[in-house]
Picture (cartoon, rainbow, N blue to C red):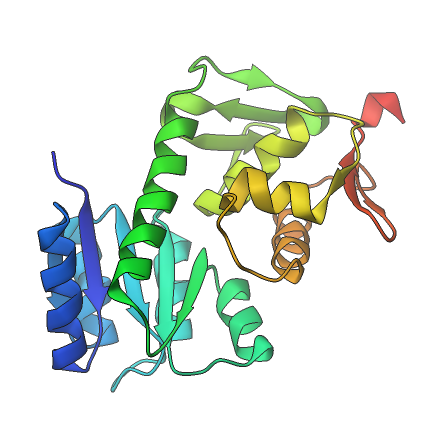
Length: 228
């Protein structure tokens, strides 16, 4: 089955180019031109990945990103002419997994899509049985689900992958560069502050207390509560 890409882009020439490129690369691509159409298409099209424009005529792309990640567990790449670091961080904080600045090379967009989907496949192919970690965290790999004290915790794909990096390597100091390699891939060009944002989001969503520690000037480490 072909991976499905939902393109939410109000500039039809750009949307057409993206759809052509994705179709040529053996994806199934669907274009919509407003944020509200995009959100509705999530249910009917059920995409494996979303390409989301920042500037939409009805709903801001950042808001659309938040709406999608609150309800669906699907990776999002934001496409925008806004290139400042503050804008990138705003998009990432809204739940985006990656960020491409316009004008872009279609080959790069395709490569980013393939990279994200490939990493998601690897995660899904890992050991499937549920596993219990510290702080009451349970990971059900087959369902791509995380629970804490029996309650489901909604995580984006990147947050899920990042959490597994910490859970599977307790007490190991991991630099931001290593985490970028493990979660975003060797070719990910993002700033290391991307890691900081995702760690902050994990701390907000999970009751980790002091278990997810900052190692100042280096990175982070996960110290299970019973080991502290």
